[in-house]
Image 1 (cartoon, rainbow, N blue to C red):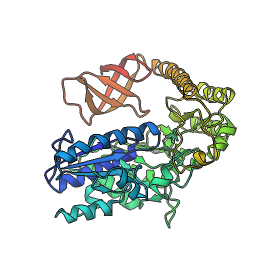
Image 2 (image 1 turned 90 degrees about the horizontal axis):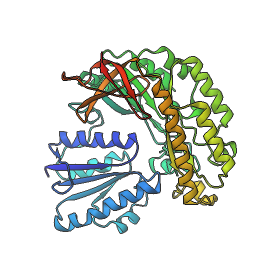
Image 3 (image 1 turned 135 degrees about the vertical axis):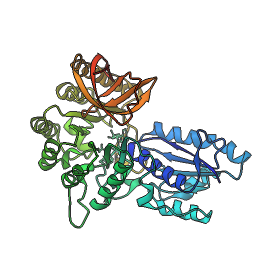
Image 4 (image 1 turned 180 degrees about the vertical axis):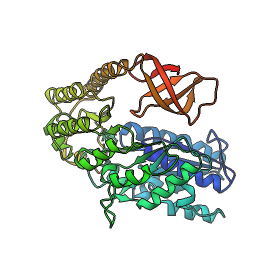
Length: 423
Ligand code: SAM
Ligand code: SF4
């Protein structure tokens, strides 16, 4: 077995998990290949948060049936949120898949690898690649205890489990020694970090510890839940120099009846007060959010309240999704999916058009300003990087800029990105 191919869909947590397995496979002596065709191991990391994603995974799995027939020696493995405890059902549906393991069920993958003469997975070693990215994802907790009525994640990723604070600091220290400049701390409810640990550290404590790491330039964290966002954490964002002024705070809906049916645990007014407090404490904070439209029973008036929240709050970024009934959730069991697909799509398009207008206005205010970036990539012949407020900026330079801070004067803006000239 010499070559591997990993196909990933879904959230940052899935991307982080795929990077972790890729690091392990490289350590085990395998090399990455661009397509599954010539790989000896094809691993799919799946997402089933919405039906749309699940359909893509199923199509991908079906496309691998022929590969397995022509090359029976290839190993096909499936992980991610599609894999639940009833693996037998999946085995019946996709008999050409050799290995199933639930998200982060590393012991199953490790046992499979050891059975083929490879070394076992090592959480410490494999969480730090030889050449880590400038901006690296660091999962600080797994699972979720919240059980929002529409969401399948707690059923697939299990109860919330925080990682030890020293272990996270050690991983970040090692990443920085190998070239990482920014870390993005990941958790489903990242602001509930530490609640399940005996010494009960919180996210503010972790941020303070990471802020002391020499050579690390920036720290971000996502995704925060409004009910867990403490004053202490907001203060930490304001006070700690490496922590970026950027908070991802999903509201999901602007109507209190819908929020209650979603089991989110806060009202639109409480959310508004929290945003006001964040903006008073952290000047120039960039706020992003998630919104679901077409939740069961959502009327035109209730949807209008979501639009109103977008208009009033003026988020920097909004991820908008049409409600998708998901297996096991309380919403699919108790609520009728009664908003038509056409209405869902029309509401999604309205929310998106409004948000694009707002984002274009917010970004236009950067015209003529000089912004500070951390350069983390190259696209279409230009360098790109992000501001502390998570604005994506493109600029041209003949010099190597990867991993460097840069000052860029903005001369063009859109709803999605900024362009400028190196100052
Ligand atoms: N833990 C985060 C939170 O509390 O918002 C986000 C996790 S969830 C995997 C990512 C986003 O997917 C959610 O914020 C929500 O907007 C969306 N989502 C989850 N379940 C959904 C569903 N059944 N239909 C549509 N969107 C959904
Ligand atoms: Fe899903 Fe809610 Fe947990 Fe986020 S907080 S992962 S939306 S159950």
